[in-house]
Image (cartoon, rainbow, N blue to C red; front, side, top):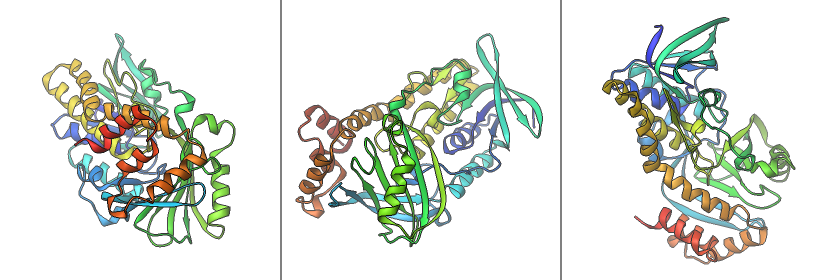
Length: 389
């Protein structure tokens, strides 16, 4: 290991590994520091993603695909189920393997990885980030870099240390918990979404199949709800009602930032990607594909900056992200704010109305149109996302 690299990436999740890969592919030196023992573990994710979201970065492989999804099912509070054929295929991943494969692709491009490397500070000179401080095998170490890319998750201490405003309103921080369970009966080609005040107020509950008899069962509720009642208590109630005899294989909990991207995701010598930059889809809470896109854009831009000898070039990343997904996420956030405050009666009415649509004509676009029929400004947002090609 060298004492100085062109780029140091903090965090080896999908966003960090893609930042490392797309920078290394340009021939610059890259080091990735991961605090956990293994890349891809622990898993804090529902593990759902579209085939399109995967294929841009890695060839789909059965070893990390646990289920292939072709349908979306909305379950209203009164039990009414509205099912939609998705326009493209989706996957439920095995993140432990998937993240590892992403890291392998970055390493193949030339990036170096060190696990169990706990970053605990930055090297800052002349108000510019010049590297990181970390602990490894009981020793304090430093490594210098021309650019540091923070992929250290929603808490992003690295971003705060660099002076970027990473604060998020607690109401936009989803309180999430999930159990991977066995002994459940459900269609393995369908993702199930439950809505309602008694299930997941100001959020939604999901059941994602991971093969025959196995599923990820979880929910996310807003921080405002989480202050009054824990997400875990909602999960416990759901399990008692729906899967009382299921075996719990794993249980995880954490926060998901469901807000538009941070105002600033670059600074002097620093870039933020993934959850650290708030690149999660605010409507769905999904962050794998968008994090990889953010990582790719950051890695490309950082590599260009090194090769040009112009570190100010990293600020181009903000525009590239905004043009690719940032503007779209702002639209998703407005739709989220319009939907998540619905009462149970509204969700029931949406399901009843939608089930009158012929099955072959159903789509996510007309589901949202049905939901927001009395909110013209949000219908325009729906049209921008789902209807305008």
